[in-house]
Image (cartoon, rainbow, N blue to C red; front, side, top):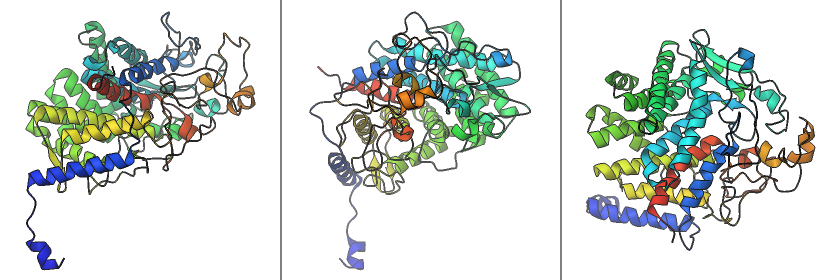
Amino acid sequence: MGYSAALSRPRPSPISRAVVFHVFVLVWFSSHVVLAAEHPDYADALAKSLHFFQGQRSGRLPPDQAVTWRSDSATSDGSAANVDLSGGYYDGGDNVKFGFPMAFTATMLSWSIIEYGGRMQGRVHDARAAVRWATDYLLKAATATPGTLYVGVGDADADHHCWERPEDMDTPRTVYSVSASAPGSDVAGETAAALAAASVVFKAADPAYSRRLVAAAKDVMTFAWQHQGKYSDHVGGGVSNYYPSYSGYTDELLWGSAWLLWATKNTSYLADVISLGANDGVDMFSWDNKLAGARILLSRRALLNGDKRLDAFTRQAEDFICRVLPKSASPSSSTPYTPGGLMHRSDNANLQYVASASFLLTTYAKYMAGSKRTFSCQNLPVTHKTLRALAKQQVDYVLGANPLGMSYMVGYGARWPRRIHHRASSMPSEAAHPARIGCQEGFDTYLYAPGDNPNVLAGAVIGGPDQNDAFPDDRTDYARSEPTTYTSAPLVGCLAYFAGSYKNK
């Protein structure tokens, strides 16, 4: 076709462009998905994902503990600083409590309940319990010492030189904190977000607890604003090697303020979020970078409550979505996909990015449907159905609709990882092996052992396959075989939504 002919060709109407686009999306999905005979059992996956958090518990376990191969551990955490910091979660397959990703875990579990608790089919009690195990700890961390926020327990470097059960650990339980002289606006802003979001979850279920949470959230947020700085610039013990704040702290100031705006309805927080603006483009959402999540959260108020002052955040939320849709659906996409159709953001713990993006897609689709909104990625129209289809395809891939037919959730489906990178799962329980297992003994006997893990950590979602959809199921490959709480937390919301939408007979 000549240049002049191309210019004179009639432009398709918006309706015809939408039809072409949806056909395009369906072709992309059908060519990248291993189609299952029926939908996954999302309700079963939801139950297992909530079960996983019990396997990550630190502290004295309750009588109704369902993961019975775990026992009490780290019950004297905080004693090095003369405070009680027992409880909370180990972040993944080690025995350290990192406050930054733990707070993000709590925030995302709370957001999952707020949006999809009505679809949890009787599991909302388990979901609230998962939140509370984190927020009970975060309340202590935020209120034990005035002017101090405790942000971690356990020497991470020492811990990673051992392979031992949490019940046996004898590495230093060093306590780490931020303060006016050693600021950490990022971890403080995330902690405030977690406490504020949880206050919404418990507002009706436990009003007194909700009031405690929101009061602490306000104080921690004030601290974040007044003493600005990156926590990983001031906290030692290897924290900066494991969870440094790559994105800085402006995103957490926005995130924490957005959650306090929801929890309190105080317009001073609205002024704060507007003052922070919505400028940087992002194509991922994680324990480190909260910009996409904050923008979609603020879009809720813009779209469902008609608050035009937040329209800039809606535009930025949609820019994020255009960056994560596949190239066939969005010319501005910057997200790689595997041949099997999985988003691939990183070679290390990739499924955390898949889970968090899928949650945002599912949730923004809800806001779009509620406000009858559509938008375009350049010239291609996007509807709420577009977002839900992609989120479902990503979740289904995690649950086994992929080239290997492998579920990346432990205990779900016919084929799942048997040798996950997880100390407690890979070693016999105290009941099976009462004698202590030493720091170095665990490496040769258990980490490098060829057999399956003796304890099944049902619901754990691991790092996942590589960019070519390959997965070795190798316990030593922490990048692909380690589960984390912050991978599972946003997935809870997705699973709850789909459990309510696709009920297996």
